[in-house]
Structures are given as structure tokens and as C-alpha cells.
Image 1: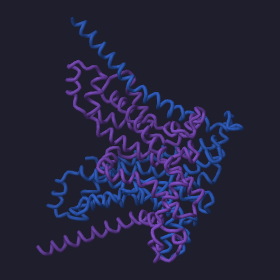
Image 2 (image 1 turned 120 degrees about the horizontal axis):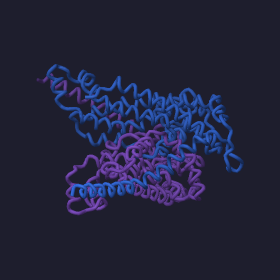
Image 3 (image 1 turned 120 degrees about the vertical axis):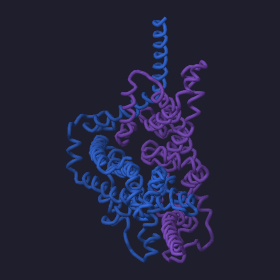
Image 4 (image 1 turned 180 degrees about the horizontal axis):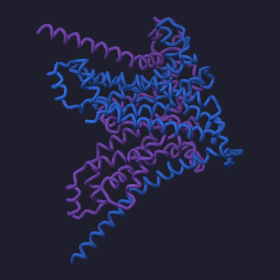
Length: 280
Length: 299
């Protein structure tokens, strides 16, 4: 008895040690980023390992400096606008198409849906050059419309919500139809509210994807006033790469909002990723 | 009477078809404009040269392909991409599987660990890469400082691809882990009980019960990660400067595409690189489909 308890203790200890080491590995970059952001450049490049903490006080003014010189309010605004527009567009178009593909019969359904699947299988890089040429023809470079452009519709979201609609029971829809709802009303008042969790997954997925994307904003929004946080960071690094505290302060400012949102809506994030799977 | 009912049904069907087509219209029009037309256009452009001032495409036949395929940089970039994938995918998958299994045990603080491991997933890769670049800094970086080494982590051509691969692994394990946890929860408990009666516990149980029953999830993750790794861009772009000595030995094929198509404005050449990438990914996908039948255990 005591032997097996001892065994169990050893096992648990090993598990905690492994997890502990992993926590350290995962956290070191974050901790180092914040600590560097609070140092002077002199301290940051001091090679003495004892100066892990900022020695001349915590330089919170680094954040203020970065905030002002790199135009962070505009970067935040652009990023938020792009995310909101993309999420709204994706959810709106994909929920309608998902309902039609999952619930309605119409000519050409199979072929059209196979097109949706084909889009999902093709590497997105193949779309980029012509998409950029279209944006520049429309005069949308350096605008929010340009940032939104490739995200106006979503094959992946259509697929995701089609699956969600297919999983709903038939009787509800039939009951609504008997009560005199037309297809539009049935969709809007009965079916749509039931796919809430699918919509949340799609929303989180779309928001994260847009937030993390680097290549597209770098291509369409080359001005530092019109671009997003990701592309803005790339620009800053190119220009001021050796001012380490400023770079780290900028990185912190770019990721903190999403981390806060993640910690608040953790359950939805994890479930959203688990159900939407892949493609990120 | 019967005739009437049939007619009514067909009116209903017609209505349904109209609603259906109307509902898919925005998505399908969007897909045609944003994806299918560009797809064809990229194929077309890969046979063209951009004229002066970026106007007009001049047909040049296979010249771009010839240039791309005879340039050793292309093959090097393709090989770099494969090397990156050979680090990111196996390590990213095994470490995250191990973590998911450990988090299935009866331990305290599960959600704390999960939150921490998942954190890189909600961070912009641009920011992540900046921090790692700073950690890797040869003169002032934390790594060389702690280990009292003087390694050029990201500018030594023999090491840089590993250093970038490590960032890739660090960034992805939380995401893979969440998918593995989902897969683990679908394994019925009786399998473990049966294994315990047969005397299989701990590591034996892991290899004889967990690994085979988890194989559909594992395959799914491996497949999506291979495609993801083969199209890696953000980390590479942020870590590897244009002036980096190790650039040629490290840059991925998508990085090369970006440089050619957008930095140098060489769209036809860039389009040809994309076509090489697409063919390569199609071959890999085909092999994976074959492998699925052999290695995946479906219940």
C-alpha cells in the first residue's frame, strides 16, 4: 500500500517537474520582453547576468515614448477596424451560405460546395498577387477596405457553419415552417440562434487570423499610419532594430490587448480553436 | 387533386432553390472574385513578364519557370522549408502530445498550465519573432549570456535554420496540445480499464492504448502542421534580415516569393515560385493521403 503511494508520489513529482520546466521555457521570452522593455538601452545591452532586473528603476516611460513615436493609437484603430470588419463579413456571409449548403436543396449545390472545399485545400499564396493588383486598381491601398479585402468571404467559415447547421434537428425547422414562417424567417429566428457556438468559433478564428497576419498588411498598407500592429512592428524593427527596450515595449503593446481578451474569454478561445481546428 | 399537390411541392422546391441560391450568392461571388479568378490569374502571370511601370503583361512562355527552376536559390529555399518542417512538425507534435497526456492526469492547476502553454497562440508572430531575435542576439542576448557561449544563433548558416525552427516549435505546441486534449477526451474510458486489468499501466498504456487510439487526431495535426510549416513566412521574415549572412541557407520558399514578387516587383517570377510551391504541396498532400490509410487506426 505504502509502496504504491510512494510510487504515485514519484510519478506526480515527475509530472510537475516536466510541466514546471515547460512553463519556464514558455514564459522566459515573455518575461524577458517585459523586463527589457523597462530598462534603459545601456542596461539592456549590459552583458552582466546579474542585471536581470532594471537597475536604475523601472522605466515605464519607454512605453509612453513608443506609444507616441510609433503612432500606436492609429495602429490599434486600424487593427481593430480590420478585425471587426472581417469578423462581421465572415460571420454574415458564411452563416447564410452554411445554412443553404447544410439545409436547403438547390441546383448545382454539390459542385458549388466542392468549389468551397477546393478553395480550402489550395495554399493561399496563389491568390495574393492578383488580389493585390485588384486592390491597387480599386485605389484601396493604404485603406481599411484594402485590409478587409481578402477576408470578405470565407470558404473555411462556410464549411464550418455548414457542419453546424447539418447537426441541428429537423423537427424545429419543420415546426417553424408549419407555423407559417418562410425560409428566411425560419433561418433568422429559429436556426441562426442555434448555431451561436459555431459563429463564436468562426469569429475568434477570424479575429486571431487577421490579428496575426503579416504579409497582407505589409503588401497593401505600406504607410505607417494605415497599417496594422503586426506590419507596424515589422516596420519599426527595420528602422530602429537596435533600440532594444523600445522594440520590446512595442512588442508588449502589440500583444497585450489580445492576451487580455484571451484570458477573459479563455473557454471560448480554446473551444473555438478545438472545433475549428487546423488552418491557422 | 394529386396533380395540385405535386405542383404545390414543386413551387415549394422552387422557392427553396431561390432562397438557397440567394444565400450562397455573396459567398460564391466572393470566392470567384477573390480566389478563383486570382488563381487562374496567377497561373497566367507565371507565363508573363511585368512590363515597365508595372503595366501590362508580356507573354514570355516558360521563361519564368526556366529561370526559377535553374536558380539554385529556389531549390535551396525549398530545401530550407523542408528542413524547417522537419524540426517544427515532429518536435511540435511529440512535445504537445506529451503535454496533453500529462494534463489528462489527476493533477492540480490544469487550467493554469493550459493557459500558459496556449499563450503564444494569441500573440502576433511578428512580436514573438522580435523577442526571440533579441534572445538570440549574439552580443547581448540572454541565451549567450546565461550559457556563457558566443553562438551566432541566427547568422550562422549552419545553425540559423534550427534556431528559427525552435521558435516555430515554441509557438505551436499550445495549439497542437489543445487539439490533442480534444482527441484524448474522445477515447472511451473502458479501454484504459481493460488495459489496467491486463496489467498495462503508465508508459505501456500510453504506447498500446493512447497512441493507436489517438492516431486520427495525430494524423490530422501532422497534416495541417506540415502544410502550415511548408508555407512559413512571418517568423522567417521577422528574424532573418535582408542583410543576414544565413539568409540564403534559411529563407523559406514563401519568403523568397515575397521578396521576388513584392520587394523586387517581379510578379511573373513570383507567380512561378508560387506554382512550384503549389505543385510541391499537392505532391505532399497526395503522399499524406496514402500514408493515412496505412498508419491511422480508425475505430
